[in-house]
Image (cartoon, one colour):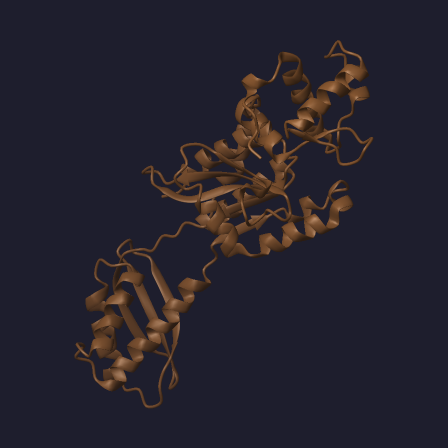
Length: 347
């Protein structure tokens, strides 16, 4: 159900709606008319407040989980609040400094990515997620060096000087000349290409019979390609931290929903695909409940922002996944700042 525009709400209805949403996001509990009247921000009787709450419920913005439990925002209500009423709380200088100190600690990029997901989890009290940049270096050379009768080491050298090693199983009786021929063949097709590009070119040549390799060398190249392809597929696509945060006292009252959410988070490929839908966003994106199919059953929200390398190219997405009662006003600007900070150290 689409939410009505804010202009359709009276000032009184808008104020009461805002207080209900803010109260729910703060406590996780439905907000009743007595609590609103006692808060002192609305000069109305509980009976008059109940009348407005009923109107907001009829509009699909609020719902009552139980007859006498007060009201809580629906997904449509949360969307209206986030898009039109939320006042974001920008990170303080102390918070900015703390985030940057944790991100800028010496170490490989993977360490910074893990720190990022932990930071996001800490600031949201939910799960922090970061997609790993899908970047393949341009390769310059590959050598296959025999270790023993049945094993060899494929040594890949990147144009940036990086070196990676992969273990390759050798067929019985593989000769030194076959190793050399395979190394020369692969190197000739690696120059300036990523591993994936080179692999596709070599597979096409071998499959069409256009390669000048003998049978032993051809088999060795195919074995090497299989190992390299498996290695690429096994690389992590997502780092998740803070699943335990989802098991707070409030969440335990709805354990089935939380179990569903944790199961969803285990499907890292699907979570990565969801986050990737935010890659082209100009600003932080918010998915609430059933707005995303992956977390529809668990009724969860996703706050996601793309992060860029120092040249301004989008290389990944980071964010927060948790219950719909996330503190959006605080978490959204923190996610945005963390994305910009991470971009300063991604080459």
